[in-house]
Image 1 (cartoon, rainbow, N blue to C red):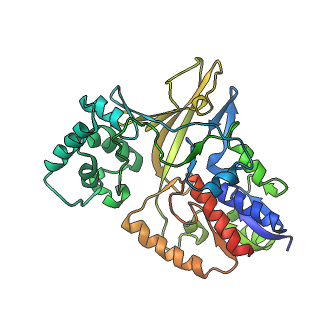
Image 2 (image 1 turned 120 degrees about the vertical axis):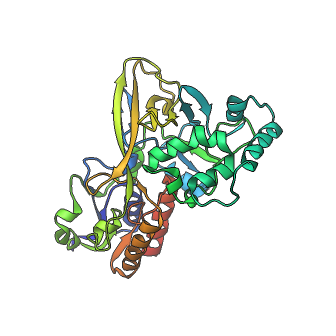
Length: 366
């Protein structure tokens, strides 16, 4: 066999594992069905702007080890994620904080805001949530839910909020300070010049083949390596024997706009039901760009089919049962390491993917 590891997928999990294996003296081949490296963190330069091709990616973590790890490959700027919500033309700060409460009710003190939310929760005809809508109402009251949560969530999931399980929203960020920083993490930023340099650094000196679908010639690729690192869909790996898992997908429309500044913020969410897209991203603001033109992306949610790129697992009872069957098979699979959001059927932030890949590589290479 020519390689120690065949790694299916050049996203963060596959790239980190390959990097660590190479450092340990292992021979790796990375294949990817797309025409570029990096999975969903891939950036494409347009008009001198690094466009997050698969949606906004803001790196954030409390783990100093992970922060130092990514800073080996790039210099991170001071970008702070402070999205806005547009509800029928009115703008509100996110996450929910004193700026939001002032915009909603005109309240100026934390005590006034607490009283307002408590009054709305007290008027609800239930005390225990049986679905996502009731869970959200018990956390933030009616005004915030109706204007900033309900329709955005229903667009994102393609389902009525009353039909979604309550555990999807276990908590909501509510701050009684004038702080628009979405994340509480100690470390946050965007790599100057985009994420591609991190992927290129991780995969430096490692053979990578693009436009290669593992399933087009599975036996051939498996015969070329002693072990397999698989980051694709776990149900596809097992040929959907227990059924297909559900995923939410996204469709992106990228546009070059002949003006310096389109919306004044990197991310604006559209939380009404009439607007079909969930948000508009203006990429130059991730790196404080001063280019003469700007690039914006409209993000539309959809149900991912077998031939559509999956993004978010649909964590309901039906899919949990199916996934548990695949998970049990994967535990008994010899010579295969499953990792990443698709192989593990879970939503990961970037720092969590990296931590998972580092643990998998440590366990494997020790």
